[in-house]
Length: 273
Image (cartoon, rainbow, N blue to C red; front, side, top):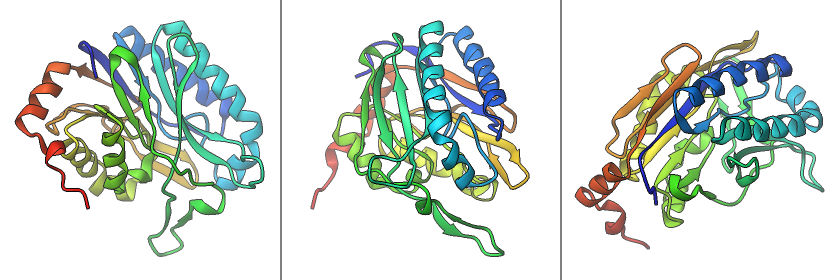
């Protein structure tokens, strides 16, 4: 459980195909969050790089993944924060597909937990606007909760997972009192669905929710919606980064969590088949 109040930050950034420039962009935003007092900071899905094609990113994963992981560890130690971010990891042995992972790193730079995205973004909006994530990305199998000690139990998910409420119930079963959804939501879906779905996941699970977000134009073919959010267990949006890169930062309060779960004990009312 969350032991005391503290500040948490969800970063809104614009990753590009330029790996080194994107890390510099992220570095400034992490520093801003830490300077403003955040102890828990989240970066979005695919934070180090968004190339023009999934194949391009997959081909570079062997090089970029260890560099990005080392960067995460260094930043966590430098600022004395718990830091998490979405990365593209190289294929597991025996597979040709990369892994879309969320890695949580502690203040000492050591890995606390990692989660591999379970739900693949295989959709078609017509007019050639088609995404088949499963062609290049290997889905994970397990729901994962990161034990952050006095900062609470953080339930992990990535982007398209947001549309599957059963994933978040599995996180509740593991004791989550916060949720996170690092994402690169398309502008088309983000306008109508981003705030609605995030608030729903916070409300139905009576949990704080951090949603780091990609936003803006990444390259000639891709743009994301933005709006990094921090939401409280009642569904109130405590902070919203808006349309521009920046930091959404808000207070995480264990008393507020206790109050909401006492008033609406829906998690204890679940009927299990």
